[in-house]
Image 1 (tube, rainbow, N blue to C red):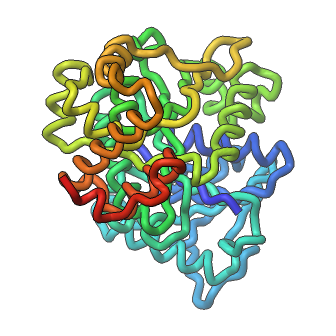
Image 2: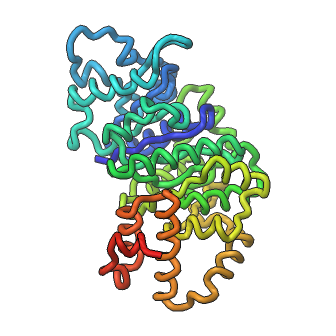
Length: 369
């Protein structure tokens, strides 16, 4: 069973994107559990045709509920649960998420054979341990970050990447970032540079689409509202990218410090050589797909000349595979020294990237000068 967790800045489009992903996968025959984890309990509204379903925390169960009592089934076949939570200014939403996870587990909803996938739609950017319950409690696995090109949205993405690093020992990985653009004509070079520094691939880029807004007014997922529209095909391809990614495909993020983040925003994330060395130990894998245009398929995002040129300068002496390995070994040592990753994770990353050269590498080698 796949366990996918959507995070990102509030209002960035997590519920719209995650609900369409759940719907399109369910329409293709998979059994999907979609869990809304916001006190507003609106993640499943479009899936349920405008109906706000009873929340787990507000249902007043006096005994352990059954799976049937917790789940509402949408017209697209998605099984829906809303955690709910306290009203504004009262109580802790994070504790509510943790409690909902306990109740779902006891009801058997999280058993490995119950669903093909569980999709969690989380609020905010993981500033609270309760919001990280699907990570901390080993309930989730693949994190998908939703972001726009705006600075504070990227800042939230950086915070989510920190959470992934913190919970990596639980088997948590970051599948990548989906860019939900505010400005359809935005220059993608700065955000592309940011994702390269973060060592997280761009899974897809969604530009402004009027059909999504019309579907929201109709309280339906756009993949159900307009099943033959290009945007539905784009969501289907994006879902395939997310579901096909395994944990082994995902590299560990290299989040920026707050100081580095704000320094780099002033130069639109143009990195210097020290910034590149910091993230070189774990390079992104795979393509950077773009979702745009009526007939466009998933394609590569535009390369950034500044980063490419800088990396070419760093790689001039690395024409041979062994030279590449030695360079990344030094970068790994630097990352360990600065506390960006621990020795075991750095060792695993190097061994996966360079099995021929790193098979005898030890933790002590990463600690040496």
